[in-house]
Image 1 (cartoon, rainbow, N blue to C red):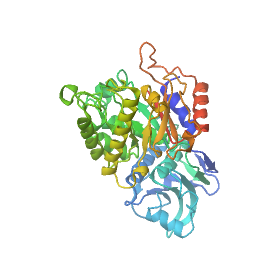
Image 2: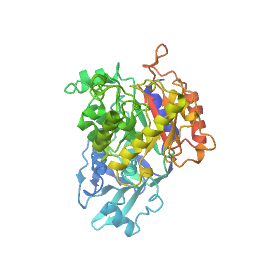
Image 3: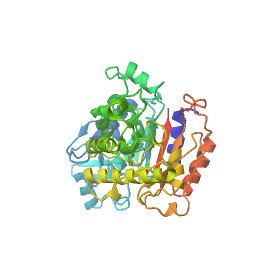
Image 4: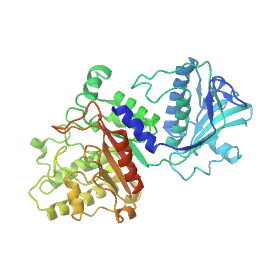
Length: 456
């Protein structure tokens, strides 16, 4: 089983269920709308992702039919494909005139309604309306039409062929339900032998590494799979994500949040000398070098705060090492609690709103699990992310007290692992049934806030 299959399995487990009578086909049925006669209508004042996915959908229609469907910012007399959020003037107008009912999705994240309408506006005979509860919901809706007309989310990465149609017709209605998992995505780990040389030598030679063009393609895949977050590559061979300002722009342009692994506090990657050089910065030891580490984390949040992120709290050693310093367990617990307090102080400084509204995670990986079990206090709104043992067996699940936490829980799960002598990098050896059993146990014990799949 390869990483593609594993990602598909994960999405199948957590994907967006729908109440569907929507039909997308190459033949007209009843009052179906002929997409070949449509223009795509978006509100220029809506979220920037709406215009992006409108262009993606136009490209998808061309892949299927060879025909061009224009994207417009104002009403026309053509049949329309209308895409928007409740902030769109067109969606507002249709809702106010009770031509669509968005009340059932308005208080839920990342949901959508797709419906066909007759005479939605003066001079417009018919339309397909894709209304999202938010910008990702609208994106998932329009891209679900792309998938059903024959464009796989893997059309680019896996060269999945697109079946040609003379035209595409849409009829009926569909309402998606809330995602089973609030935050869901992949961690580009163990990239040294695959993604980094391919990107640097083949796809993005001007960067010589993984850069914004590669990240844009990865984020497009995540969006088409109805994910919403990415933990970027972080090995020393890779250019650290935040060392290229265009990387975070690429992710944001596709509506993808940035998160990080268990050893990257507040989006900071200490595995590379361009981020942390021990010869200059000193030892990565919060007990003896707190001011330097605090300053680095402060600057990282300051530059990243304008974007949507999920922030890892606490601290391990350099890269994937254990915590530095000759301390007792009690001293390590005390130091980590101080680090968490300091990190939340930094978040409060640069991000508006209550600290509890900022997405934050704590991953009890390796020695951090022992410290959590020894009494480490993690703020109640912080999500506990349970890791597997690197081979597919989740090491901890939420106990009755954990299940009462406001931050709930999540999962960090490997389908690629670098750890001699037990590496599995090119082929994922985790059985699909094991993956299902472990993730289902986690879900049944309320680990439904955050799922991160480690892939090579």
